[in-house]
Amino acid sequence: MKLVDKYLFKEILGPFAVGVLTFVVLITGHILFTVVQVIVEHGVPLPNIAKFLLLQVPQATMLALPVSTLLACSLGLNRLANENELTALRSAGSSLLRLVMPALVLGVGASVASVALSEYVVPWADQEGERMLRQIVLSQRALAFRPGKFTSTGRDLHFFVEDVDTSRDQLKGVHVFQVQARDFPIFTRAEKATFTAQGLQTSAADFYHLDKQGRLTWGPAAGVKVNLEEVFAHLPGQIQTLANMKMGQLLTKWQQIEGQHPGAGRRYMVELHWRLALAASCLVFALLAAPLTLRFSRGESLVGVMMTLVVAFVYYVIMLWLRMLGEAGSLPAALSGWLQNGAIVLISVWALWRYR
Image 1 (cartoon, rainbow, N blue to C red):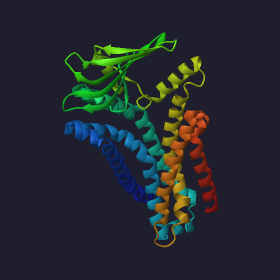
Image 2: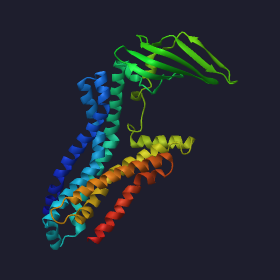
Image 3: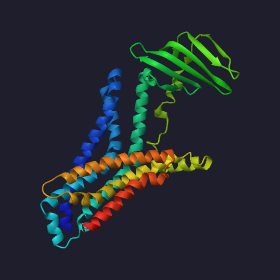
Protein backbone atom coordinates (compact mmCIF):
# COMPACT_ATOMS: atom_id res chain seq x y z
CA MET A 1 0.00 0.00 0.00
CA LYS A 2 2.97 2.36 0.17
CA LEU A 3 2.67 3.01 -3.58
CA VAL A 4 -1.03 3.82 -3.17
CA ASP A 5 -0.28 6.15 -0.26
CA LYS A 6 2.27 8.05 -2.34
CA TYR A 7 -0.23 8.31 -5.17
CA LEU A 8 -2.95 9.64 -2.88
CA PHE A 9 -0.55 12.10 -1.23
CA LYS A 10 0.40 13.41 -4.66
CA GLU A 11 -3.25 14.11 -5.38
CA ILE A 12 -3.78 16.26 -2.27
CA LEU A 13 -0.44 17.94 -1.54
CA GLY A 14 -0.50 20.15 -4.66
CA PRO A 15 -4.01 21.53 -4.03
CA PHE A 16 -3.12 21.96 -0.36
CA ALA A 17 -0.11 24.18 -1.13
CA VAL A 18 -2.08 26.20 -3.67
CA GLY A 19 -4.97 26.55 -1.25
CA VAL A 20 -2.78 27.85 1.58
CA LEU A 21 -1.12 30.38 -0.73
CA THR A 22 -4.46 31.54 -2.14
CA PHE A 23 -6.19 32.01 1.20
CA VAL A 24 -3.16 33.75 2.73
CA VAL A 25 -3.16 36.24 -0.15
CA LEU A 26 -6.91 36.81 0.26
CA ILE A 27 -6.68 37.34 4.03
CA THR A 28 -3.69 39.68 3.89
CA GLY A 29 -5.31 41.51 0.98
CA HIS A 30 -8.39 42.06 3.13
CA ILE A 31 -6.18 43.46 5.90
CA LEU A 32 -4.57 45.86 3.42
CA PHE A 33 -8.00 46.93 2.17
CA THR A 34 -9.15 47.80 5.70
CA VAL A 35 -6.15 50.08 6.36
CA VAL A 36 -5.61 51.51 2.88
CA GLN A 37 -7.37 54.78 3.77
CA VAL A 38 -5.03 55.41 6.71
CA ILE A 39 -2.03 54.48 4.56
CA VAL A 40 -2.97 56.92 1.80
CA GLU A 41 -4.00 59.78 4.09
CA HIS A 42 -0.89 59.63 6.25
CA GLY A 43 1.68 58.72 3.62
CA VAL A 44 3.01 55.58 5.27
CA PRO A 45 6.17 54.47 3.38
CA LEU A 46 5.81 51.46 1.08
CA PRO A 47 8.54 49.39 2.87
CA ASN A 48 6.62 49.77 6.14
CA ILE A 49 3.43 48.60 4.43
CA ALA A 50 5.18 45.55 3.00
CA LYS A 51 6.74 44.68 6.36
CA PHE A 52 3.42 45.07 8.14
CA LEU A 53 1.69 42.75 5.65
CA LEU A 54 4.46 40.15 5.99
CA LEU A 55 3.92 40.18 9.74
CA GLN A 56 0.27 39.28 9.12
CA VAL A 57 1.18 36.16 7.11
CA PRO A 58 1.61 33.80 10.12
CA GLN A 59 -1.85 34.63 11.46
CA ALA A 60 -3.33 34.36 7.95
CA THR A 61 -1.62 30.99 7.45
CA MET A 62 -3.04 29.68 10.72
CA LEU A 63 -6.54 30.63 9.54
CA ALA A 64 -5.95 29.23 6.05
CA LEU A 65 -4.70 25.78 7.10
CA PRO A 66 -8.10 24.22 8.02
CA VAL A 67 -9.99 25.29 4.89
CA SER A 68 -6.98 24.46 2.69
CA THR A 69 -6.89 20.96 4.17
CA LEU A 70 -10.59 20.47 3.49
CA LEU A 71 -10.32 21.83 -0.06
CA ALA A 72 -7.23 19.77 -0.95
CA CYS A 73 -8.67 16.51 0.35
CA SER A 74 -11.96 17.16 -1.42
CA LEU A 75 -10.26 17.95 -4.75
CA GLY A 76 -8.06 14.86 -4.56
CA LEU A 77 -10.84 12.48 -3.57
CA ASN A 78 -13.23 14.05 -6.08
CA ARG A 79 -10.87 13.32 -8.99
CA LEU A 80 -10.27 9.74 -7.85
CA ALA A 81 -13.99 9.15 -7.42
CA ASN A 82 -14.91 10.65 -10.80
CA GLU A 83 -12.45 8.35 -12.58
CA ASN A 84 -13.62 5.32 -10.55
CA GLU A 85 -10.16 4.86 -9.04
CA LEU A 86 -11.59 4.75 -5.53
CA THR A 87 -14.01 2.03 -6.65
CA ALA A 88 -11.13 0.02 -8.13
CA LEU A 89 -9.07 0.33 -4.97
CA ARG A 90 -11.99 -0.70 -2.80
CA SER A 91 -12.62 -3.67 -5.09
CA ALA A 92 -9.00 -4.67 -4.51
CA GLY A 93 -9.73 -4.95 -0.80
CA SER A 94 -8.89 -1.49 0.55
CA SER A 95 -11.35 -0.09 3.08
CA LEU A 96 -12.64 3.46 2.78
CA LEU A 97 -10.96 4.43 6.04
CA ARG A 98 -7.65 3.08 4.77
CA LEU A 99 -7.98 5.10 1.56
CA VAL A 100 -8.60 8.35 3.43
CA MET A 101 -5.64 7.70 5.72
CA PRO A 102 -3.29 9.99 3.67
CA ALA A 103 -5.83 12.80 4.06
CA LEU A 104 -5.90 12.20 7.82
CA VAL A 105 -2.09 12.28 7.94
CA LEU A 106 -2.21 15.61 6.10
CA GLY A 107 -4.75 16.82 8.65
CA VAL A 108 -2.48 15.82 11.54
CA GLY A 109 0.48 17.59 9.92
CA ALA A 110 -1.56 20.74 9.33
CA SER A 111 -2.80 20.65 12.95
CA VAL A 112 0.75 20.39 14.27
CA ALA A 113 1.82 23.26 12.01
CA SER A 114 -1.08 25.36 13.27
CA VAL A 115 -0.12 24.74 16.91
CA ALA A 116 3.50 25.63 16.17
CA LEU A 117 2.46 28.85 14.44
CA SER A 118 0.12 29.90 17.25
CA GLU A 119 2.72 29.15 19.92
CA TYR A 120 5.97 30.42 18.42
CA VAL A 121 5.44 32.54 15.29
CA VAL A 122 2.11 34.37 15.61
CA PRO A 123 2.83 35.93 19.07
CA TRP A 124 6.20 37.22 17.83
CA ALA A 125 4.71 38.56 14.58
CA ASP A 126 1.87 40.26 16.45
CA GLN A 127 4.30 41.95 18.86
CA GLU A 128 6.45 43.13 15.96
CA GLY A 129 3.38 44.45 14.15
CA GLU A 130 2.22 46.36 17.23
CA ARG A 131 5.73 47.75 17.75
CA MET A 132 5.82 48.87 14.12
CA LEU A 133 2.46 50.63 14.46
CA ARG A 134 3.78 52.40 17.55
CA GLN A 135 6.83 53.62 15.62
CA ILE A 136 4.57 54.95 12.85
CA VAL A 137 2.50 56.81 15.43
CA LEU A 138 5.64 58.25 17.03
CA SER A 139 6.72 59.63 13.66
CA GLN A 140 3.21 60.97 12.95
CA ARG A 141 1.78 62.02 16.30
CA ALA A 142 -1.66 62.84 14.95
CA LEU A 143 -2.23 59.11 14.40
CA ALA A 144 -2.47 58.68 18.18
CA PHE A 145 -5.79 60.52 18.08
CA ARG A 146 -8.73 59.21 16.06
CA PRO A 147 -11.85 61.30 15.34
CA GLY A 148 -14.74 60.12 17.47
CA LYS A 149 -12.49 57.94 19.68
CA PHE A 150 -11.21 58.34 23.24
CA THR A 151 -7.45 58.48 23.86
CA SER A 152 -6.05 58.02 27.37
CA THR A 153 -2.82 59.71 28.49
CA GLY A 154 -2.41 57.39 31.45
CA ARG A 155 -2.46 60.31 33.91
CA ASP A 156 -6.22 60.62 34.52
CA LEU A 157 -6.64 62.63 31.30
CA HIS A 158 -8.85 61.34 28.50
CA PHE A 159 -9.11 63.06 25.11
CA PHE A 160 -11.98 62.98 22.65
CA VAL A 161 -11.41 64.83 19.36
CA GLU A 162 -13.89 65.68 16.63
CA ASP A 163 -11.37 65.94 13.80
CA VAL A 164 -7.64 65.56 13.06
CA ASP A 165 -5.86 67.92 10.68
CA THR A 166 -2.59 66.19 9.80
CA SER A 167 -1.54 68.89 7.32
CA ARG A 168 -1.43 71.48 10.13
CA ASP A 169 -0.56 69.04 12.90
CA GLN A 170 -3.68 70.04 14.80
CA LEU A 171 -6.65 68.53 16.58
CA LYS A 172 -10.06 70.16 16.28
CA GLY A 173 -12.95 70.09 18.71
CA VAL A 174 -10.90 68.82 21.66
CA HIS A 175 -12.75 67.46 24.69
CA VAL A 176 -10.63 66.73 27.77
CA PHE A 177 -11.90 64.73 30.75
CA GLN A 178 -9.79 64.99 33.91
CA VAL A 179 -10.71 62.15 36.24
CA GLN A 180 -10.59 62.86 40.00
CA ALA A 181 -10.35 60.17 42.64
CA ARG A 182 -12.99 61.54 45.03
CA ASP A 183 -14.98 63.88 42.84
CA PHE A 184 -16.67 64.09 39.46
CA PRO A 185 -14.43 64.63 36.38
CA ILE A 186 -13.55 68.11 35.18
CA PHE A 187 -14.59 68.62 31.57
CA THR A 188 -12.63 71.05 29.38
CA ARG A 189 -13.37 71.92 25.76
CA ALA A 190 -11.09 73.73 23.34
CA GLU A 191 -11.59 74.60 19.69
CA LYS A 192 -8.21 73.19 18.74
CA ALA A 193 -4.94 71.79 20.03
CA THR A 194 -1.51 72.03 18.41
CA PHE A 195 1.42 69.64 18.59
CA THR A 196 4.61 71.17 19.95
CA ALA A 197 8.10 69.87 20.62
CA GLN A 198 7.12 69.27 24.26
CA GLY A 199 3.79 67.62 23.54
CA LEU A 200 0.27 68.88 22.96
CA GLN A 201 -1.07 72.34 23.82
CA THR A 202 -4.75 73.25 23.58
CA SER A 203 -5.97 76.73 22.81
CA ALA A 204 -7.94 78.81 25.30
CA ALA A 205 -10.69 76.60 26.64
CA ASP A 206 -13.78 76.48 28.82
CA PHE A 207 -14.02 74.17 31.83
CA TYR A 208 -17.10 72.67 33.47
CA HIS A 209 -17.34 70.89 36.83
CA LEU A 210 -20.33 69.39 38.58
CA ASP A 211 -19.81 68.85 42.31
CA LYS A 212 -21.49 66.25 44.49
CA GLN A 213 -24.18 68.71 45.55
CA GLY A 214 -25.21 69.18 41.92
CA ARG A 215 -23.75 72.67 41.54
CA LEU A 216 -22.20 73.44 38.17
CA THR A 217 -19.08 75.58 37.97
CA TRP A 218 -17.75 76.85 34.65
CA GLY A 219 -15.43 79.45 33.26
CA PRO A 220 -12.44 80.12 30.98
CA ALA A 221 -9.26 78.02 31.28
CA ALA A 222 -5.74 78.74 30.07
CA GLY A 223 -5.58 75.41 28.23
CA VAL A 224 -4.22 71.96 28.76
CA LYS A 225 -0.65 70.73 28.22
CA VAL A 226 0.09 67.04 27.75
CA ASN A 227 3.38 65.17 27.49
CA LEU A 228 2.75 62.85 24.54
CA GLU A 229 5.28 60.31 25.76
CA GLU A 230 2.65 59.40 28.33
CA VAL A 231 0.14 58.81 25.54
CA PHE A 232 2.55 56.75 23.45
CA ALA A 233 3.46 54.65 26.46
CA HIS A 234 -0.11 53.33 26.47
CA LEU A 235 -0.35 52.51 22.78
CA PRO A 236 -0.81 48.84 21.78
CA GLY A 237 2.92 48.33 21.19
CA GLN A 238 3.42 48.36 24.94
CA ILE A 239 0.42 46.22 25.85
CA GLN A 240 0.42 42.42 25.92
CA THR A 241 -2.70 41.34 24.06
CA LEU A 242 -4.36 37.94 23.76
CA ALA A 243 -3.02 37.58 20.22
CA ASN A 244 0.64 37.90 21.24
CA MET A 245 0.48 35.67 24.31
CA LYS A 246 1.68 32.09 24.17
CA MET A 247 -0.63 29.32 25.33
CA GLY A 248 1.35 28.82 28.52
CA GLN A 249 1.03 32.52 29.27
CA LEU A 250 -2.72 32.39 28.66
CA LEU A 251 -3.07 29.52 31.12
CA THR A 252 -0.92 31.25 33.75
CA LYS A 253 -2.84 34.52 33.37
CA TRP A 254 -6.15 32.69 33.69
CA GLN A 255 -5.00 30.96 36.89
CA GLN A 256 -3.80 34.25 38.39
CA ILE A 257 -7.02 36.14 37.66
CA GLU A 258 -9.34 33.28 38.59
CA GLY A 259 -7.56 32.97 41.93
CA GLN A 260 -8.48 36.57 42.76
CA HIS A 261 -11.73 37.11 40.85
CA PRO A 262 -13.49 33.90 39.76
CA GLY A 263 -14.91 34.27 36.25
CA ALA A 264 -12.91 37.39 35.38
CA GLY A 265 -10.26 35.45 33.44
CA ARG A 266 -12.72 33.70 31.15
CA ARG A 267 -11.46 35.31 27.94
CA TYR A 268 -7.96 33.85 28.43
CA MET A 269 -9.31 30.31 28.64
CA VAL A 270 -11.61 30.94 25.67
CA GLU A 271 -8.62 32.10 23.62
CA LEU A 272 -6.64 29.00 24.63
CA HIS A 273 -9.42 26.58 23.66
CA TRP A 274 -10.09 28.54 20.45
CA ARG A 275 -6.47 28.15 19.28
CA LEU A 276 -6.37 24.44 20.04
CA ALA A 277 -9.76 23.84 18.42
CA LEU A 278 -8.73 25.80 15.32
CA ALA A 279 -5.60 23.65 15.01
CA ALA A 280 -7.58 20.44 15.51
CA SER A 281 -10.07 21.53 12.83
CA CYS A 282 -7.45 20.65 10.19
CA LEU A 283 -7.76 16.97 11.17
CA VAL A 284 -11.53 17.30 11.60
CA PHE A 285 -11.90 18.72 8.08
CA ALA A 286 -9.69 15.97 6.62
CA LEU A 287 -12.06 13.43 8.18
CA LEU A 288 -15.10 15.27 6.79
CA ALA A 289 -13.72 15.56 3.24
CA ALA A 290 -14.29 11.92 2.29
CA PRO A 291 -18.03 11.52 3.04
CA LEU A 292 -18.80 15.07 1.88
CA THR A 293 -17.06 14.57 -1.47
CA LEU A 294 -18.40 11.06 -2.08
CA ARG A 295 -21.92 12.28 -1.44
CA PHE A 296 -21.71 14.69 -4.43
CA SER A 297 -19.03 13.08 -6.62
CA ARG A 298 -21.19 11.39 -9.24
CA GLY A 299 -20.42 12.39 -12.80
CA GLU A 300 -17.96 15.20 -13.45
CA SER A 301 -19.58 17.52 -10.94
CA LEU A 302 -17.57 19.69 -8.56
CA VAL A 303 -20.56 20.14 -6.27
CA GLY A 304 -18.75 18.26 -3.53
CA VAL A 305 -15.80 20.64 -3.71
CA MET A 306 -18.12 23.65 -3.65
CA MET A 307 -19.90 22.20 -0.66
CA THR A 308 -16.58 22.10 1.21
CA LEU A 309 -16.25 25.87 0.79
CA VAL A 310 -19.79 26.35 2.07
CA VAL A 311 -19.07 24.11 5.05
CA ALA A 312 -15.84 26.01 5.80
CA PHE A 313 -17.67 29.35 5.70
CA VAL A 314 -20.44 28.10 8.00
CA TYR A 315 -17.83 26.58 10.31
CA TYR A 316 -15.97 29.87 10.77
CA VAL A 317 -19.21 31.77 11.37
CA ILE A 318 -20.34 29.28 14.01
CA MET A 319 -16.86 29.24 15.56
CA LEU A 320 -16.87 33.03 15.98
CA TRP A 321 -20.43 32.97 17.32
CA LEU A 322 -19.55 30.29 19.90
CA ARG A 323 -16.46 32.26 20.89
CA MET A 324 -18.63 35.31 21.58
CA LEU A 325 -20.92 33.16 23.72
CA GLY A 326 -17.91 31.83 25.60
CA GLU A 327 -16.50 35.29 26.27
CA ALA A 328 -19.93 36.46 27.44
CA GLY A 329 -20.14 33.53 29.86
CA SER A 330 -23.15 31.94 28.12
CA LEU A 331 -21.11 28.80 27.37
CA PRO A 332 -18.22 27.13 29.21
CA ALA A 333 -14.87 28.04 27.65
CA ALA A 334 -14.11 24.48 26.54
CA LEU A 335 -17.55 24.01 24.99
CA SER A 336 -17.36 27.31 23.10
CA GLY A 337 -14.11 26.19 21.50
CA TRP A 338 -14.79 22.52 20.75
CA LEU A 339 -18.53 22.21 20.15
CA GLN A 340 -18.34 22.70 16.36
CA ASN A 341 -15.45 20.22 16.06
CA GLY A 342 -17.31 17.60 18.04
CA ALA A 343 -20.39 17.97 15.85
CA ILE A 344 -18.36 17.56 12.63
CA VAL A 345 -16.55 14.49 13.97
CA LEU A 346 -19.86 12.79 14.83
CA ILE A 347 -21.31 13.60 11.41
CA SER A 348 -18.17 12.41 9.62
CA VAL A 349 -17.95 9.11 11.51
CA TRP A 350 -21.62 8.42 10.87
CA ALA A 351 -21.24 9.20 7.15
CA LEU A 352 -18.10 7.05 6.81
CA TRP A 353 -19.93 4.19 8.49
CA ARG A 354 -22.67 4.49 5.87
CA TYR A 355 -20.16 4.47 2.98
CA ARG A 356 -17.97 1.74 4.46
